[in-house]
Length: 72
Image (cartoon, rainbow, N blue to C red; front, side, top):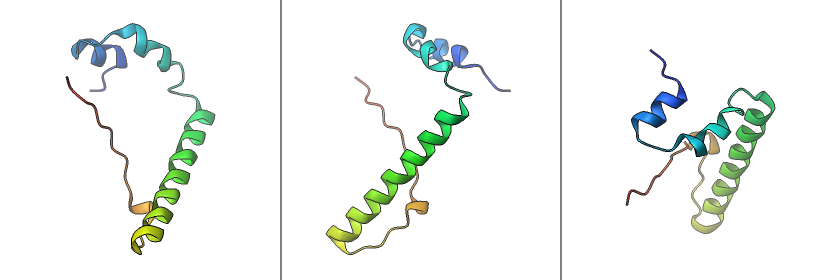
């Protein structure tokens, strides 16, 4: 069962006012494509940096995205 974004945020006790303004972009295909291309470019930059600094060759396609949230 797929939950809507509002239910997820409410369950976590987070403010909806900040989150709701981003829902309008969820189905924007142009933005999604731009976002995906930017992530790919950055992965290529990281792979180049690693090769330059360490000599290790890392495929940008082998990298994955992570999200880190600091809890206080």
